[in-house]
Length: 345
Ligand code: ES4
Ligand code: ZN
Image (cartoon, rainbow, N blue to C red; front, top):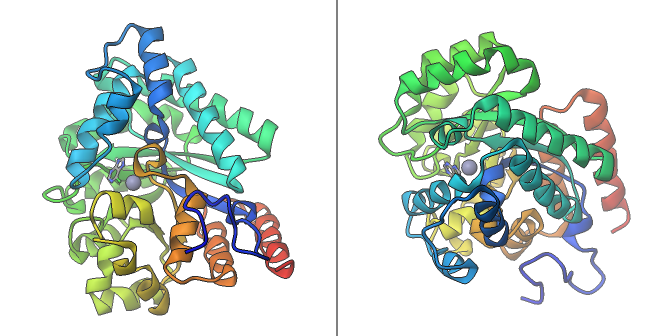
Protein backbone atom coordinates (compact mmCIF):
# COMPACT_ATOMS: atom_id res chain seq x y z
CA UNK A 1 0.00 0.00 0.00
CA UNK A 2 1.28 3.44 -0.90
CA UNK A 3 -1.25 5.30 1.23
CA UNK A 4 -0.51 6.32 4.80
CA UNK A 5 -2.94 5.38 7.52
CA UNK A 6 -3.52 8.96 8.67
CA UNK A 7 -5.11 10.08 5.42
CA UNK A 8 -2.39 12.61 4.76
CA UNK A 9 -0.57 11.08 1.78
CA UNK A 10 -2.86 10.40 -1.15
CA UNK A 11 -1.83 8.08 -3.98
CA UNK A 12 -0.27 9.96 -6.93
CA UNK A 13 -2.86 12.07 -8.77
CA UNK A 14 -5.56 11.54 -6.15
CA UNK A 15 -6.73 14.12 -3.60
CA UNK A 16 -6.35 13.36 0.09
CA UNK A 17 -9.44 11.83 1.65
CA UNK A 18 -9.14 14.66 4.16
CA UNK A 19 -10.55 17.02 1.52
CA UNK A 20 -13.65 14.85 0.94
CA UNK A 21 -16.62 16.58 2.63
CA UNK A 22 -18.24 14.24 5.15
CA UNK A 23 -20.46 13.89 8.21
CA UNK A 24 -19.43 12.10 11.40
CA UNK A 25 -22.43 10.22 12.83
CA UNK A 26 -20.77 7.87 15.33
CA UNK A 27 -18.43 9.73 17.63
CA UNK A 28 -18.22 9.50 21.42
CA UNK A 29 -16.80 12.83 22.52
CA UNK A 30 -15.25 11.14 25.57
CA UNK A 31 -13.43 8.86 23.10
CA UNK A 32 -11.57 11.85 21.66
CA UNK A 33 -9.77 12.49 24.96
CA UNK A 34 -6.06 12.36 24.07
CA UNK A 35 -3.63 11.32 26.85
CA UNK A 36 -2.01 14.79 26.91
CA UNK A 37 -5.36 16.51 27.55
CA UNK A 38 -6.33 13.83 30.09
CA UNK A 39 -3.25 14.67 32.17
CA UNK A 40 -3.81 18.44 31.79
CA UNK A 41 -7.41 18.12 32.99
CA UNK A 42 -6.39 15.77 35.82
CA UNK A 43 -3.99 18.45 37.02
CA UNK A 44 -6.56 21.25 36.62
CA UNK A 45 -9.16 19.30 38.61
CA UNK A 46 -6.97 17.64 41.21
CA UNK A 47 -7.83 14.16 39.94
CA UNK A 48 -5.20 11.43 40.25
CA UNK A 49 -5.14 9.15 37.21
CA UNK A 50 -4.01 5.55 37.84
CA UNK A 51 -1.26 5.89 35.17
CA UNK A 52 2.31 7.11 35.57
CA UNK A 53 2.30 9.47 32.57
CA UNK A 54 1.14 9.97 28.98
CA UNK A 55 3.36 7.18 27.66
CA UNK A 56 2.15 4.74 30.31
CA UNK A 57 -1.46 5.56 29.43
CA UNK A 58 -0.87 5.19 25.70
CA UNK A 59 0.88 1.85 26.30
CA UNK A 60 -2.43 0.51 27.65
CA UNK A 61 -4.22 1.10 24.33
CA UNK A 62 -3.98 -2.59 23.51
CA UNK A 63 -7.48 -4.00 23.74
CA UNK A 64 -8.76 -7.57 23.58
CA UNK A 65 -12.47 -6.73 23.23
CA UNK A 66 -15.06 -4.02 23.91
CA UNK A 67 -15.00 -4.44 27.72
CA UNK A 68 -11.21 -4.09 27.97
CA UNK A 69 -11.51 -0.75 26.15
CA UNK A 70 -14.50 0.46 28.20
CA UNK A 71 -12.60 -0.10 31.48
CA UNK A 72 -9.85 2.31 30.37
CA UNK A 73 -12.28 4.75 28.72
CA UNK A 74 -14.42 5.12 31.87
CA UNK A 75 -11.30 5.48 34.00
CA UNK A 76 -10.03 8.40 31.87
CA UNK A 77 -13.45 10.09 31.95
CA UNK A 78 -12.98 10.87 35.66
CA UNK A 79 -10.85 13.91 34.69
CA UNK A 80 -13.85 15.67 33.05
CA UNK A 81 -15.52 17.83 35.70
CA UNK A 82 -16.52 21.33 34.53
CA UNK A 83 -18.43 22.73 31.56
CA UNK A 84 -15.12 24.26 30.44
CA UNK A 85 -13.50 20.80 30.39
CA UNK A 86 -16.18 19.58 27.99
CA UNK A 87 -15.80 22.68 25.81
CA UNK A 88 -12.02 22.22 25.65
CA UNK A 89 -12.47 18.53 24.80
CA UNK A 90 -14.99 19.29 22.05
CA UNK A 91 -12.96 22.13 20.49
CA UNK A 92 -9.84 19.91 20.39
CA UNK A 93 -11.92 17.28 18.58
CA UNK A 94 -13.50 19.78 16.15
CA UNK A 95 -10.06 21.11 15.15
CA UNK A 96 -9.04 17.57 14.12
CA UNK A 97 -12.41 16.89 12.50
CA UNK A 98 -12.23 20.11 10.46
CA UNK A 99 -8.76 19.11 9.23
CA UNK A 100 -10.31 15.77 8.15
CA UNK A 101 -13.05 17.40 6.04
CA UNK A 102 -15.87 16.89 8.56
CA UNK A 103 -18.71 19.39 8.00
CA UNK A 104 -21.40 17.96 10.27
CA UNK A 105 -21.13 16.06 13.57
CA UNK A 106 -23.74 14.15 15.59
CA UNK A 107 -21.95 13.63 18.89
CA UNK A 108 -22.59 10.98 21.55
CA UNK A 109 -22.02 11.60 25.24
CA UNK A 110 -22.55 9.43 28.38
CA UNK A 111 -24.20 11.46 31.19
CA UNK A 112 -24.64 8.47 33.52
CA UNK A 113 -20.87 8.08 33.70
CA UNK A 114 -20.37 11.81 34.33
CA UNK A 115 -23.05 11.70 37.05
CA UNK A 116 -20.97 9.09 38.86
CA UNK A 117 -18.11 11.64 38.76
CA UNK A 118 -20.35 14.33 40.28
CA UNK A 119 -21.16 16.16 37.03
CA UNK A 120 -24.81 16.72 36.09
CA UNK A 121 -26.19 16.43 32.55
CA UNK A 122 -26.89 20.17 32.28
CA UNK A 123 -23.19 20.95 32.85
CA UNK A 124 -22.09 18.46 30.19
CA UNK A 125 -24.67 19.71 27.68
CA UNK A 126 -23.78 23.37 28.28
CA UNK A 127 -20.07 22.65 27.84
CA UNK A 128 -20.52 20.64 24.66
CA UNK A 129 -22.94 23.17 23.16
CA UNK A 130 -20.36 25.90 23.72
CA UNK A 131 -17.95 23.68 21.77
CA UNK A 132 -20.44 23.43 18.90
CA UNK A 133 -20.78 27.24 18.85
CA UNK A 134 -16.99 27.53 18.38
CA UNK A 135 -17.04 24.81 15.68
CA UNK A 136 -19.78 26.59 13.77
CA UNK A 137 -18.04 29.94 13.96
CA UNK A 138 -14.48 28.75 13.25
CA UNK A 139 -15.03 25.91 10.80
CA UNK A 140 -18.67 26.12 9.63
CA UNK A 141 -19.39 22.74 11.24
CA UNK A 142 -23.07 21.95 11.96
CA UNK A 143 -24.57 19.20 14.10
CA UNK A 144 -25.71 18.41 17.59
CA UNK A 145 -25.82 16.08 20.55
CA UNK A 146 -27.11 12.53 20.99
CA UNK A 147 -27.48 11.52 24.63
CA UNK A 148 -26.46 7.88 25.17
CA UNK A 149 -27.92 5.41 27.62
CA UNK A 150 -25.17 3.29 29.19
CA UNK A 151 -26.82 -0.12 28.79
CA UNK A 152 -24.88 -1.95 31.52
CA UNK A 153 -26.32 0.37 34.17
CA UNK A 154 -29.81 -0.39 35.55
CA UNK A 155 -32.85 0.59 33.50
CA UNK A 156 -33.96 2.73 36.48
CA UNK A 157 -30.82 4.83 35.99
CA UNK A 158 -31.77 5.41 32.33
CA UNK A 159 -35.25 6.45 33.47
CA UNK A 160 -33.77 8.90 35.98
CA UNK A 161 -31.60 10.32 33.20
CA UNK A 162 -34.69 10.94 31.06
CA UNK A 163 -36.29 12.77 34.00
CA UNK A 164 -33.18 14.92 34.24
CA UNK A 165 -32.89 15.76 30.54
CA UNK A 166 -36.60 16.21 29.77
CA UNK A 167 -36.39 20.01 30.31
CA UNK A 168 -33.25 20.10 28.11
CA UNK A 169 -34.56 17.92 25.28
CA UNK A 170 -34.72 20.90 22.90
CA UNK A 171 -30.90 21.11 23.16
CA UNK A 172 -30.48 17.52 21.94
CA UNK A 173 -31.01 15.80 18.58
CA UNK A 174 -31.52 12.28 19.76
CA UNK A 175 -31.00 9.35 22.09
CA UNK A 176 -28.60 6.42 21.66
CA UNK A 177 -27.61 3.23 23.48
CA UNK A 178 -23.98 2.31 24.13
CA UNK A 179 -21.46 0.50 26.42
CA UNK A 180 -21.12 -3.26 27.05
CA UNK A 181 -23.43 -4.99 24.60
CA UNK A 182 -23.59 -8.76 25.20
CA UNK A 183 -26.07 -9.51 27.99
CA UNK A 184 -27.73 -6.08 27.76
CA UNK A 185 -30.16 -6.48 24.84
CA UNK A 186 -32.09 -3.55 23.37
CA UNK A 187 -35.40 -5.00 24.61
CA UNK A 188 -34.50 -3.81 28.13
CA UNK A 189 -34.85 -0.21 26.95
CA UNK A 190 -38.12 -0.36 25.01
CA UNK A 191 -39.98 1.89 27.45
CA UNK A 192 -37.04 4.30 27.83
CA UNK A 193 -36.86 4.77 24.06
CA UNK A 194 -40.63 5.23 23.75
CA UNK A 195 -40.41 7.96 26.37
CA UNK A 196 -37.49 9.60 24.55
CA UNK A 197 -39.49 9.62 21.31
CA UNK A 198 -42.24 11.41 23.24
CA UNK A 199 -39.67 14.09 24.11
CA UNK A 200 -39.05 14.61 20.39
CA UNK A 201 -35.70 12.78 20.31
CA UNK A 202 -34.52 10.86 17.22
CA UNK A 203 -33.54 7.26 18.03
CA UNK A 204 -30.32 5.34 17.29
CA UNK A 205 -28.63 2.43 19.11
CA UNK A 206 -25.40 0.47 19.12
CA UNK A 207 -26.33 -3.06 18.04
CA UNK A 208 -24.55 -5.93 16.34
CA UNK A 209 -21.09 -4.70 17.35
CA UNK A 210 -20.18 -7.83 19.35
CA UNK A 211 -23.67 -9.27 19.90
CA UNK A 212 -25.57 -11.16 17.19
CA UNK A 213 -27.90 -9.88 14.48
CA UNK A 214 -30.90 -10.47 16.77
CA UNK A 215 -29.85 -7.38 18.74
CA UNK A 216 -30.14 -5.36 15.52
CA UNK A 217 -33.66 -6.70 14.96
CA UNK A 218 -34.58 -5.71 18.53
CA UNK A 219 -33.22 -2.20 18.02
CA UNK A 220 -35.29 -1.84 14.85
CA UNK A 221 -38.52 -3.40 16.09
CA UNK A 222 -38.59 -2.50 19.78
CA UNK A 223 -36.61 0.74 19.96
CA UNK A 224 -37.69 1.90 16.48
CA UNK A 225 -34.26 3.29 15.70
CA UNK A 226 -33.65 5.26 12.51
CA UNK A 227 -29.97 4.26 12.29
CA UNK A 228 -27.97 1.36 13.72
CA UNK A 229 -24.53 2.07 15.23
CA UNK A 230 -21.98 -0.54 14.10
CA UNK A 231 -24.50 -3.20 13.00
CA UNK A 232 -21.73 -5.27 11.42
CA UNK A 233 -23.15 -8.59 12.67
CA UNK A 234 -26.11 -7.95 10.34
CA UNK A 235 -23.88 -9.67 7.80
CA UNK A 236 -24.88 -13.02 9.41
CA UNK A 237 -28.62 -12.60 8.65
CA UNK A 238 -29.78 -12.35 5.03
CA UNK A 239 -33.31 -11.30 5.97
CA UNK A 240 -31.91 -8.50 8.11
CA UNK A 241 -29.65 -7.30 5.28
CA UNK A 242 -32.65 -7.21 2.96
CA UNK A 243 -34.66 -5.29 5.56
CA UNK A 244 -31.90 -2.71 6.12
CA UNK A 245 -31.48 -2.25 2.36
CA UNK A 246 -35.20 -2.03 1.55
CA UNK A 247 -35.98 0.41 4.35
CA UNK A 248 -32.71 2.30 3.81
CA UNK A 249 -31.75 2.06 7.50
CA UNK A 250 -28.16 3.36 7.66
CA UNK A 251 -25.34 1.64 9.56
CA UNK A 252 -22.65 3.80 11.19
CA UNK A 253 -19.62 1.57 10.69
CA UNK A 254 -16.28 2.24 12.45
CA UNK A 255 -13.53 0.17 10.79
CA UNK A 256 -10.58 1.04 13.06
CA UNK A 257 -12.76 0.50 16.15
CA UNK A 258 -13.74 -2.96 14.88
CA UNK A 259 -10.07 -3.75 14.25
CA UNK A 260 -8.78 -2.48 17.63
CA UNK A 261 -11.57 -4.17 19.63
CA UNK A 262 -11.04 -7.36 17.63
CA UNK A 263 -14.57 -7.50 16.25
CA UNK A 264 -12.70 -8.37 13.04
CA UNK A 265 -9.32 -10.16 12.85
CA UNK A 266 -7.98 -7.82 10.16
CA UNK A 267 -9.32 -5.26 7.70
CA UNK A 268 -9.44 -7.80 4.87
CA UNK A 269 -12.04 -9.72 6.94
CA UNK A 270 -14.19 -6.62 7.51
CA UNK A 271 -17.80 -7.06 6.27
CA UNK A 272 -18.06 -3.47 4.95
CA UNK A 273 -17.77 -4.47 1.27
CA UNK A 274 -20.35 -7.22 1.70
CA UNK A 275 -22.74 -4.81 3.44
CA UNK A 276 -22.42 -2.33 0.55
CA UNK A 277 -22.91 -5.15 -1.96
CA UNK A 278 -26.11 -6.16 -0.12
CA UNK A 279 -27.43 -2.64 -0.79
CA UNK A 280 -27.15 -1.38 2.80
CA UNK A 281 -26.63 2.37 3.35
CA UNK A 282 -23.21 2.27 5.01
CA UNK A 283 -21.40 5.24 6.57
CA UNK A 284 -17.79 5.47 7.84
CA UNK A 285 -17.08 6.91 11.29
CA UNK A 286 -14.40 7.07 13.98
CA UNK A 287 -16.16 5.99 17.23
CA UNK A 288 -13.40 6.70 19.84
CA UNK A 289 -10.58 8.03 17.69
CA UNK A 290 -8.11 8.82 20.48
CA UNK A 291 -8.17 5.17 21.52
CA UNK A 292 -8.46 3.42 18.15
CA UNK A 293 -5.49 4.84 16.27
CA UNK A 294 -7.07 7.38 13.95
CA UNK A 295 -9.66 10.05 13.29
CA UNK A 296 -12.21 9.86 10.48
CA UNK A 297 -9.87 10.36 7.50
CA UNK A 298 -7.82 7.42 8.77
CA UNK A 299 -11.03 5.36 8.82
CA UNK A 300 -11.71 6.34 5.18
CA UNK A 301 -8.10 5.34 4.43
CA UNK A 302 -8.76 1.96 6.05
CA UNK A 303 -11.75 1.56 3.72
CA UNK A 304 -9.54 2.53 0.76
CA UNK A 305 -7.25 -0.31 1.86
CA UNK A 306 -10.27 -2.64 1.62
CA UNK A 307 -10.32 -1.81 -2.10
CA UNK A 308 -12.75 1.11 -2.32
CA UNK A 309 -11.77 3.70 -4.95
CA UNK A 310 -12.28 7.45 -4.55
CA UNK A 311 -15.70 7.42 -6.24
CA UNK A 312 -16.91 4.66 -3.92
CA UNK A 313 -15.52 6.51 -0.90
CA UNK A 314 -17.35 9.64 -2.02
CA UNK A 315 -20.56 7.60 -2.22
CA UNK A 316 -20.00 6.58 1.42
CA UNK A 317 -19.45 10.24 2.34
CA UNK A 318 -22.68 11.14 0.55
CA UNK A 319 -24.41 8.40 2.57
CA UNK A 320 -23.13 10.06 5.76
CA UNK A 321 -24.87 13.27 4.78
CA UNK A 322 -28.16 11.70 3.69
CA UNK A 323 -28.16 9.49 6.83
CA UNK A 324 -27.65 12.51 9.11
CA UNK A 325 -30.35 14.41 10.98
CA UNK A 326 -29.37 17.70 9.30
CA UNK A 327 -32.22 19.66 7.73
CA UNK A 328 -32.94 19.34 4.01
CA UNK A 329 -31.17 22.58 3.04
CA UNK A 330 -27.97 21.63 4.87
CA UNK A 331 -28.03 18.13 3.38
CA UNK A 332 -28.42 19.58 -0.13
CA UNK A 333 -25.48 21.93 0.45
CA UNK A 334 -23.21 19.13 1.67
CA UNK A 335 -24.27 16.63 -1.01
CA UNK A 336 -23.40 19.29 -3.61
CA UNK A 337 -19.97 19.69 -1.99
CA UNK A 338 -19.33 15.93 -2.24
CA UNK A 339 -20.38 15.94 -5.90
CA UNK A 340 -17.99 18.81 -6.62
CA UNK A 341 -15.20 16.76 -5.06
CA UNK A 342 -16.08 13.84 -7.34
CA UNK A 343 -16.30 16.10 -10.41
CA UNK A 344 -12.72 17.27 -9.75
CA UNK A 345 -11.33 13.70 -9.71
C1 ES4 B 1 -18.13 2.52 22.60
CL1 ES4 B 1 -16.84 1.22 20.63
C2 ES4 B 1 -18.12 1.43 21.74
N1 ES4 B 1 -19.07 0.51 21.83
C3 ES4 B 1 -20.02 0.64 22.73
N2 ES4 B 1 -20.09 1.66 23.58
C4 ES4 B 1 -19.15 2.60 23.50
N3 ES4 B 1 -18.97 3.73 24.21
C5 ES4 B 1 -17.87 4.32 23.76
N4 ES4 B 1 -17.34 3.60 22.77
ZN1 ZN C 1 -19.71 3.67 19.54
